[in-house]
Amino acid sequence: MSLNAAPSANRVHIAFFGKRNAGKSSLLNAVTGQDLALVSEVKGTTTDPVYKAMELLPLGPVVMIDTPGMDDEGPLGNLRVDKALQVLRKTDVAVLVVDASVGKDAVDDELLRLLEERRVPYIVALNKCDVIDNGAAKRDGRETEREILLSAKDKINIDALKEKIARLAAKEEPATGIVEGIVGPSDCVVLVTPIDAAAPKGRLILPQQQTIRDILDTNAAALVVQDSGLSEALSRLAKKPALVITDSQVFAEVAAMVPPDIPLTSFSILFARHKGGLENAVAGAKTLDTLRDKDTVLISEGCTHHRQCEDIGTVKLPRWIRAYTEKNIEFAFSSGTEFPNDLSPYSLVIHCGGCMLNNREMQFRQAAAANAKVPITNYGIAIAFMQGILKRSVAMFPRIARELD
Image 1 (cartoon, rainbow, N blue to C red):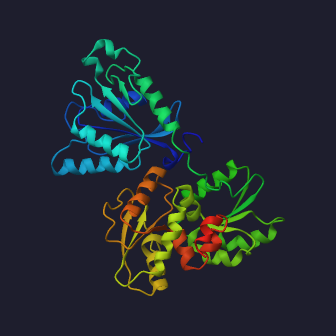
Image 2 (cartoon, rainbow, N blue to C red):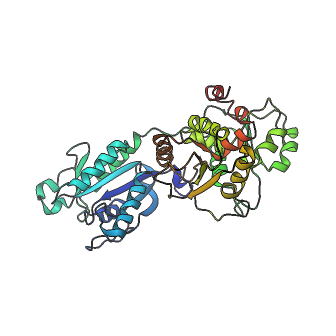
Image 3 (cartoon, rainbow, N blue to C red):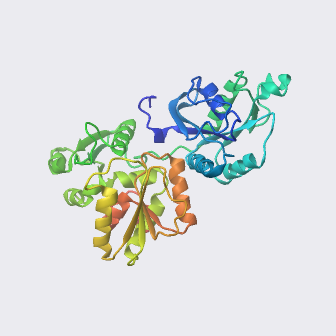
C-alpha cells in the first residue's frame, strides 16, 4: 500500500516518550529529517501529542508521535501526562528518550514498567551522548538490544535507531486480513453500501474502502451496490457470490434478500475479527438479553465525525436496544481517544468496528473491558443479534457460530 493510500490505523505507530527536556522532539526531528516538533530549552514545550504520517525506510508507512513530558506538573501538567498515556494505548513501538548525562529515574522506570506490562516493544534512547563521552558517542550504538547511545543534536547513531525500530516493528504479529480465509482468488464478493445522509460526499466510508482493497489483494472481484439494487444485482450474476457483506444499518433488509445458501456477514463483524475481538464480541452480544431497567450501556466510537440526525451510534442503536429489551436502558457515549478509564458504571460496551483505531488501541479497549468484567460487543454484532441473524452472519467461522447454539 502506498504512502498516500495507507490509513492511519494500518500504519505502525512509533511514539517517543520521556521526561521534559530529554530531547524527545529533537530526536523525532532527527529521525524524520524534518522539523515536525517544536524544540525549545523551556520545559513542557510539547503540550499535546504531535502526529505525523510518513514513510520510514526500511519499515514503510508509519505514524510518528511526539508526546508531552511524563514528569509534567500541576493541573495542566497532569492533563498532559494523561494525553501521553493515551498515546501509549496505541503504540506499536515505543522510544523512551533519556538524557544520558542524567540517566534514568523513577519516572522512566515507571514508564518501562507500563511498557513491559502491556508488552509494547521498546528502545531506550540515551540521548545527548555528545556531552558525556566523546568516545562512546562515536560507537555504532548497539550497546544492548534495548538501549542505544545517540545524539539528536549531532545526528549520531540516528540510522542505528531507525534500524532498531524497524526490527522491533517487524516482530509484531500481522493482523488477520479482513476477508482472509473466507474469500479466495476469482471469487465474487457483493458489498452492500447504502448511500444515505450519513455517507460522506463523494466517497465511501473507510471500512468499505479497506474491505474492497482487501478483496482485490486476494485477487477476488468486488461488486458494490446499494441495498436498493441488491436483488437485481444478485439476479444478474451467472454464478452465486462467495459472500455478501452489508452495512449493519440495513442488515435485516439485506438478509431477507440474500438466499440462505449465500454466506452473509457485515463490515462490523469482519472488522471485529480483523481487530482480534470477534469471539468476545459475539459473547458480549448475549448480554442484551439480560439487561435490566436503569442499566447503562456505553456506546463508543473510534472516530469523531459530524453526527447526523439519524446517527447510528447516538440515535439508532439506543432506539433499537430499548425496543428489543423493552427496558428503560440508559446510555453513555464516547468518541475518538476519549475511552473511559473506569468501565465499572456500565453493564455493556458496544463499540464501533474500529476502522480508525489501530490494533493496539482496540486490544487495549477489549482488555480494559475484560479486566473490568464488563461485556463488550460491536455495532454490527449487536444489530445482527437483535435481528436474530447473528448465527447466520458468523456461519463462516464455525467455532464461533457453535457458541450461539
